[in-house]
Amino acid sequence: MPPSLDTSTLAVSSSIVTCYHGTSVERAAGIIREQRFIPSRNAEDWLGDGVYFFQDGLGHAQRWAQKRFGEHATVIEAEVRLGRCLDLLSGLYDGIMQAGYAGLEAQHTAAGTQPPVNTVRGRNERDCAIMRLIVAAATDPIQTIRCSFPEGDPLYPGAAIGQLDHTQLCVLDQACIQTLTWLR
View 1: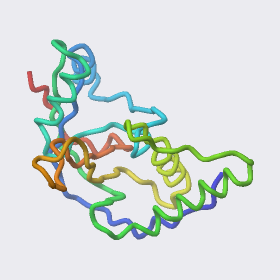
View 2: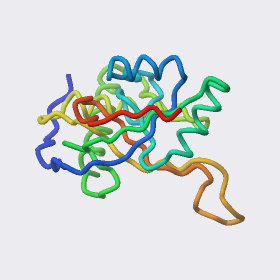
View 3: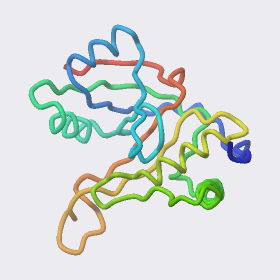
View 4: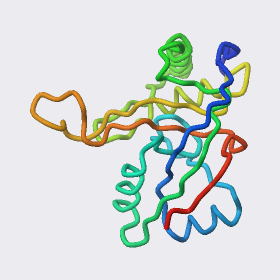
């Protein structure tokens, strides 16, 4: 178990954001019926374990779902209260992230193993391992994690803006999900 990380500085936000979750029609039916998601727990999920949303990104959710589920693609809209959010857009929590990285390095050094790495093909195993460590070591429970994600080809020659850039929200505490609407 990693040493505790002081997360008492995370602001508790009552802000509600509109988010979109791409999925299949079959899964959407279950989510709406149960009013609950099955959290993603893949080793390459860059914000760790949780339910992933595109914040204010309906087009991104539609595109992602279409690529993954083809003719069975659909999108669920959610209103999410940020709660105790590790908001990496704020620029306030670099120390927590650096402590998470140091903790991961220390664990692997002690075990004589190599830490996971991120790849250019989107397998963000290092980021995931660091987020898992931070969540496990948090002195106050983290409910959501938000970060911008650069993705895709440049919009034009020399652009720093990518075609698929977006803000991603990972919800760890599903009590933060206020409403769900199936966009058929």
